[in-house]
Length: 169
Picture 1 (cartoon, rainbow, N blue to C red):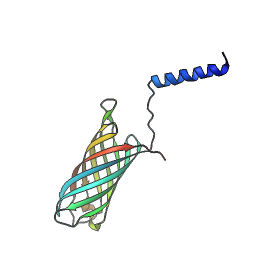
Picture 2 (spheres, rainbow, N blue to C red):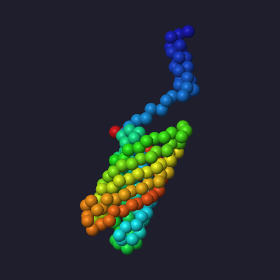
Picture 3 (spheres, one colour):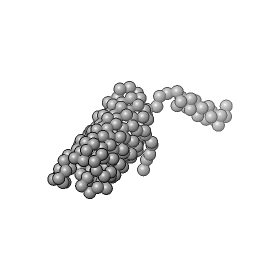
């Protein structure tokens, strides 16, 4: 047999083996994802509903930087919008090959169009990750009293659904 033909046979054999054998999946970072959420709560101005859309940057499997644009509709005050930026840390608990649970907690800062609504916050979440779809329960405690003595702190609870997109710098 000619050398060229032997090379083709070896390449074909390796290609078949490559497709049959399980290859470990290598995670690459940073990784990007998005989420859409709805939250509710009460404040000095009555009850409110918040809608948000976020872009997340995962630096590794336990550190996430989240930037969420939000819009808040209040029952007794003017509506406003802004950006929540936070850094959170999490623990991945694998249930099976495609399903994981991820508790997380972190802190950040709220930049709002209404000046007395800018404040630091703490947040926590519990998410169920099913492949490229995620369902999460969230809680956020906004520390208004640290920056404005006239405002009370707020607790916001919510639900988020998300998907994943790939990306690299």
